[in-house]
Image 1: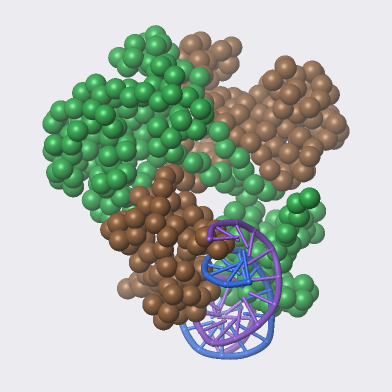
Image 2 (image 1 turned 90 degrees about the horizontal axis):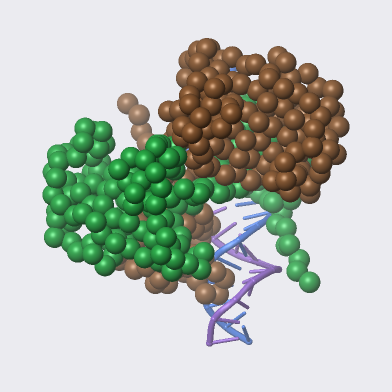
Amino acid sequence: MSKPQISRWQAIHDEVLRRIHAREWQPGQVIPNEVDLAAEFGCARATVNRALRVLAEAGLLERRRKAGTRVALHPVSRATVDIPVIRQEIEERGLAYGYALIENTKDCPPAQVRAALGTRNCQHITALHRAEGAPYVFEDRWISLDTLSDAACADFTTFSANEWLLAHAPYTHGDIRFAAHAAGPEAQMLGTEPGAPVFVIDRTTWDHAQAITSVRLFYAPGYSIHTTIGAGA
Amino acid sequence: MSKPQISRWQAIHDEVLRRIHAREWQPGQVIPNEVDLAAEFGCARATVNRALRVLAEAGLLERRRKAGTRVALHPVSRATVDIPVIRQEIEERGLAYGYALIENTKDCPPAQVRAALGTRNCQHITALHRAEGAPYVFEDRWISLDTLSDAACADFTTFSANEWLLAHAPYTHGDIRFAAHAAGPEAQMLGTEPGAPVFVIDRTTWDHAQAITSVRLFYAPGYSIHTTIGAGA
DNA sequence: GAGTGGTCTAGACCACTGT
DNA sequence: CAGTGGTCTAGACCACTCC
């Protein structure tokens, strides 16, 4: 037998959620303040605070000092997407991981990447990741040599730039874009035809103000990103 | 002048993050327990707990009772994606929102949707959302009439099913998938050619154990989802 | 069994912001 | 200015899990 072990703040979280769903507290309406709710639930204010903070982070409540807490008018669905290391993503599905470096040169990136990285001084790496022998994702990466001069002499033949960067260049923040593109020259490597729809992820990461790398991942046909969303209204 | 106003727990959060990035605490290594860290930082244990909890939620730390807190071996990038109501998404870009119902019939869904919703008794709604007159997204939605019998007599001509559901059927959890497809018959409505790459979002939502709706959104060419990621290693 | 994190309390001070 | 949420404290008990 397994007991869920609901904590006090989770119970309050659930009860507040129930009142929002039941329209006892309507969208846009101000709900009682923390002191009153703590009195109602017979607990400390900090416990109510925790419950409401989680709901606010989920986008269901809007909180402002003095103005109080309101039920959000336009609750957005907030999904958290995990973007793992490619090798890990493949191996976690129980498939054999394969990697092949295609190109590794010092080069000047195209305008769009140049704008993202803020430099012309880049290492250009292209590689193919395979799952169980089949093409999985084609990686087209630019690394700023202004930020990471080591990248010029790194060996990407056995380990991908993906993993090298994880070990050598932590980032503070990044920027991700998901889109659908028509396959270009990389179609052949992905085992599809030019013009076929491919799922593309563009990602640029920074270490504070220093841009580190900008990468475009072309996924083989059939790829999709899956995630779940919590409570919404 | 604006002061960032860094709170105590955020300062500790940042310092721990610095130590992880600086490899002072290496991946897989157990870091000092909360009591020791509280002593080091000269604060209450709850404050350290808050800082470490946030880092754990971000995937950078792994915490287990008795075993202690370790630096994650495979820090995944965890991005939060906001999926707003379509009308809101368009209007927030300062564009005129347009909506046209195409079809609204009681019908039996295809096998895949049937499996997701667990019923044959469905309302089928298709509609086109426009931004500034141009096609923006084509919506292909199935609503379970077992769960929401009201949907059979709802009027979707002026307000989209998207908004009707928000007001009538809160969900407790959902399931989202992003993918790239080749445009089918909907290509014409999206102003593109069959076979062209389109960004597709599949979403199914439940209210507890009851499936509510399953929708497939076909976005017009050029659409992309943008988000940011926080600190990673 | 014992060490660690998870939670909770009662109270306090502070930051922000609407009035 | 005053009301509200944001944070912090010192201490406590409990749940979990490794040894």
